[in-house]
Image (cartoon, rainbow, N blue to C red):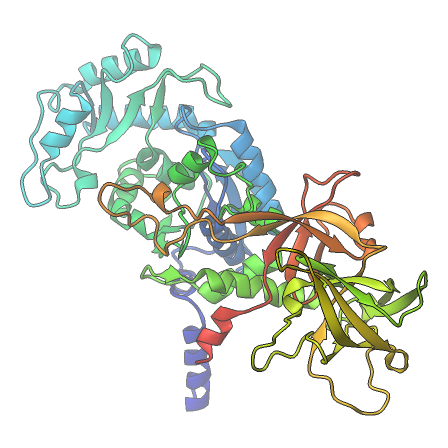
Length: 563
């Protein structure tokens, strides 16, 4: 092989993440002749952006290697799982653009898992323990000390079989006994110190009803479920690295197909929490309106806020696959949605904090239609016509009676370009008794129609507007970060993550937009020029429109990267 070929091969290897390099080696050495992954969520809550990264990874690997990817629900804890969560998970995966090759549930395998448990008991590798959870934990001691064997550990296989079958039959109360794997009480890995395989739980299961009174633990069910489905690469987050020896112990001692577990760093984002337990608490205690509240890091929340599948894919690509955990800046996620929406979102004009401008030399009662571009990044979107009249709404922040240095918008004596319309020179303003500006006055140059200079004079300021007579009022929800600190999980002594909720994470105002916004449907996404990206909320009705702010136009993340 030439040096040039060697160099190209090394570049290709370097461009692949470490998981792809492992898969390549497995395909090369013959351990596996295909790639079969799975995405295995527990249906105990809605998926969040961290799950989106895992979805993109597992389905992406299957696509890249022309393999398969299953969707499997880890439904082994019926006390916390619901059909609502199952359906939401399926909706999220489809919305991200993926279709699973098979839909499975751990509960599909309850009988097989039970039969395998019987096999381990017969082989002397599992036993029924009647110790309390507290005693079990105490007997495990610490990683540097030997564990303590309880009196139940050396029961005969016959006695263990009898007790386990009676556990299944419902002869014992919840919590009175468990089935444990008999492994190594002296292992430095605490997960190997006779872990629990089954517990008694009288809880209605969303699929199997009341058929089972004992349920397998995750560590017991997971590897076997992978094995049954013929999974080759069981890709999971880094906290499961210490569980891998147990994963391998079960499949090896049952002598069944052995997938390869590979761990990668989980996704952490600042100014939010990713724990399902904490997200559920936010919902149950009504700190947010629901799982799909646009402030939540859930996929449904991001979708309602106006994020696109493409922006989530771009985010996952930019975050990459790593072995070491780090915290990702929320600004990167916002950058990704701007990148996507800039290319395809319609442009519309809306005024969020209005003050009236009266053009004193414009004919009273006259309305003309002004041509406006729908998207400067995509000529195929064409143009639209918007009304212009004597009285307009502009942003209050676009006027200063006494301008600061380098302020180029409206102030007495200054000429400003009104987007798509005319040049207008500010001539003054009117205040109320409290000193608040209630009207602004100006004169337009009829020769500057279209916002173009008739004589080559340069105008530094350009602002947006809507015709007051034709303006469409709607509710606007301005969302900000849910927490006021970068790491709400790292609470000070005596506080919880709830103490860091941002009281200004949602501001609701009435805005005024161009008339075309009235005829849009829920889910319509656009850029309000100079204001940011917005999406029409599902709570909108024929009488009332609601627009959620997806993100502003300022990109602090990209600026930081370019320093």
